[in-house]
Length: 199
Image (cartoon, rainbow, N blue to C red; front, side, top):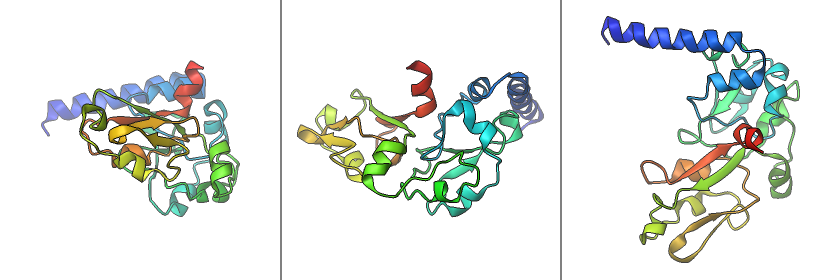
């Protein structure tokens, strides 16, 4: 990397951090990392309260068997620093619910690892299918997203040629997005904090 490119990237990151530091609340801080489409762990409380409740202890990532939980840094803003996030395309949540069991502050609430409680409380977001990209909607049967879903026929179903249809019970774990073989992916999770901001 040449010096000019390095300084450009460093300047952009510092600018992002400064903008977030000047933000007056967690929602504004969340906007500062809008360049990342991220999910909070399952059972996370409302974004407006999450960053004030989370103490950045790192226990949720340590207990995660799929190692899908990462942490924001100071470059992402003071309000977001050390709070956990998941990028579903890289590694999705497998809905084990261990992160809520270990969280000492209630930033991630405890949820029993059964389908009924997961559907009711583990709101991470909701999957959305881009039918213009989905192979099954282009006449090439696929169904990979459906088979990856831990709540198949409850959170997602398939029609003819295995065309996926997302149902209301989708909790946004990201297993469908992670498994999608299309590039760019034809199914993406809309994060819960985004859904809250437009509702």
